[in-house]
Length: 423
Ligand SMILES: [Ca+2]
Image (tube, rainbow, N blue to C red):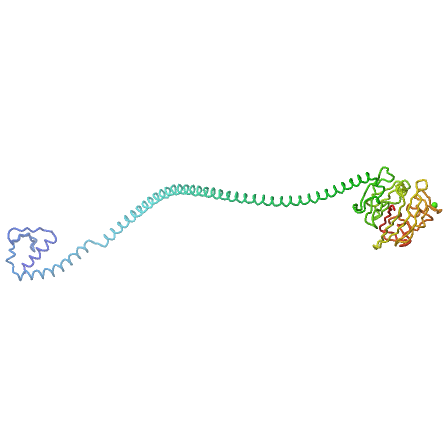
């Protein structure tokens, strides 16, 4: 048993002291051991000589015993170290240190991070700004270019449109001009036609005048009735200085020289002696040719008279006298009329052999001033059965009007004409 303890002591001392073993020779082992009196011993073992059985026994026992011993001894050591407090303290210290360190490190880290970040951000910002600036510039350059292009394109399109509009405008203008020119030309043509017509009419008139002059037409009856139409012509009674008259070349065979016409009341017929002697109005419209002319004309030969009447109902009638003559001024233009025929009745016979009277020269056979009473100028007797130079009173019955008693009584006429033709 004592040997076993020696071995145990030997193993234990090896464990605790870390004693080195040294090989001497062959299988001889020399090692220091401590006995149970704590005396150091030096033991020499010849391992080949240890009984194999002992070796096994020792091995098993050692294993069990060592295991238990180590366990026990470690627990004792751990208990003796008062490990709880120490570890706690250590951990606390470590924790404190670590916390501070970690805090510092974290702060540093974040400071660093922040700094780096700031720098990064700053740098990034600067870069970004640069980039943005550049991009903006590029963008605006691009926009500018695009705008320029767009503007250029717009300008081109606008130009095209303007060109087209101008073209259209000019086409339109051209069309309008053409139309205007056409219209102007048409109007001009019409005017020219009219002017030519008027010109030829005047030429004809002048020609007629010339012919008249050459042939010394004494009145309208001298005009060639096959070649001359109704109109104004110059005649030369007695070969004296001529005057213009209106020739009716249509009615009743034509060749009639008209000396009185009324048609619308535009000319005042209530006039004095001198005017009736000289004549007034327009031979193409309303007029009295004049007593002197009537005398000159009717003294050239034998004349017939035709009186045409129309009332406001459109009724027409005529009175024709195969003898008609007007005396000279010394007779006060005395009327000679005979040989009635026609449809209007003989309303002049009552005035046969009567002098001409005006409001200012009473040559009638009545104690009254017939011209003044009946507002006319006529060969009044006492006073009248016809009054064709009376007032233009319109469609009504009035003895002061243009009446032809034997046809419509006191009804005033709408139109009248008196004309002569040499027989
Ligand atoms: Ca009288």
